[in-house]
Image (cartoon, rainbow, N blue to C red; front, top):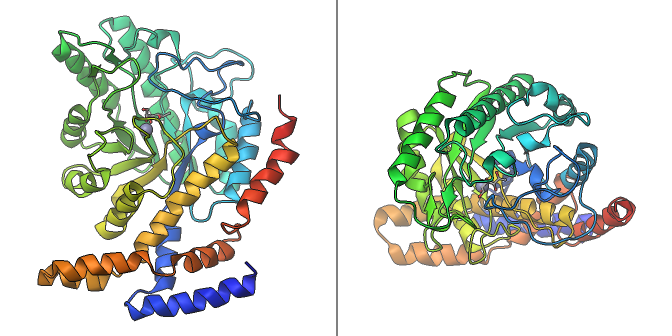
Length: 423
Ligand code: RNT
Ligand code: ZN
């Protein structure tokens, strides 16, 4: 669409929204301002840069399928790819790294030796690009994790190795927070679990609680780091037992005043993460969202505008607690163009936020208060047919990113110019 048609369509759309008491300008500003922390790992299939060659994800419960050509092989390539993604996705963005993405200058630096010097280039790049960084300890794809247990392992030696790793990862996150003048989220997710039922479940949970307590005994400034813990329902190879289940971490985050990470792929299919927001926010300091799309299982498909995502975005917009919610992405598809996958999912997340902020809130709340369930339902239906696309296109235009009709061409162009040359 031409710029002038986009503006014309928006002017009409804006009037239509105003008829329902919705300020489209305010909605654009609100949706634009929510930071979306884009995950580094869509760019290279959760590979990281510890060693060259294929990632050893097997046994980690993470599964990346597909072999589409052009994946980033170095940190420099990953940065270049994300710079391309940034030109395609509107709104305030952050970047989430894993400890396995350090730059080790060809040396082999084990997880219990990683420190902020290995992230100096990332920190300098983020400063230049005005990107906030977030961080994750990496407790998978490693020989010490090969038995399927890390922080809850029976062996003290294995536990101590991973405790040291997470301690270091937290310090790296704090260094990022210091450099950017605002806290970096540090998320801890572990693989621990079993294919079949262990008898001593209690032992594993006791040990996990103990390890986490040892890790968090080191107090880091809240201005530099926000600690979060992520539970899970099951993984490939941990179908019968996951030590860090939702119940475990809900209790942990509540009692230890930590953030809780809610991944959209980590619950029973009929559970609603949207519904969990207001329930859990009543008891924890904050929530980290891992926006994802599970197809039949925690498959981490590229995020699209599903009902689940829309419900989540609406709850976010309605919550009045945006200062306690961190939005992060967590999906990876290696079977299609990775830059396309990355930007499509991030755009879908931003679209859902904009849609949510365009809700006729005042009228809906009135119906709520008056107990007029029919009007509320009718209004929610009406909202689905409002000229949302015109607002989205105008928002993209103002953000100087391509609209839906032209960003695919930009992805293809980058593929031809850059990705095709990678073996
Ligand atoms: C795994 C968790 C975790 C990872 C990333 C790579 O089930 O969702 O968040 O996907 O840390
Ligand atoms: Zn996750």
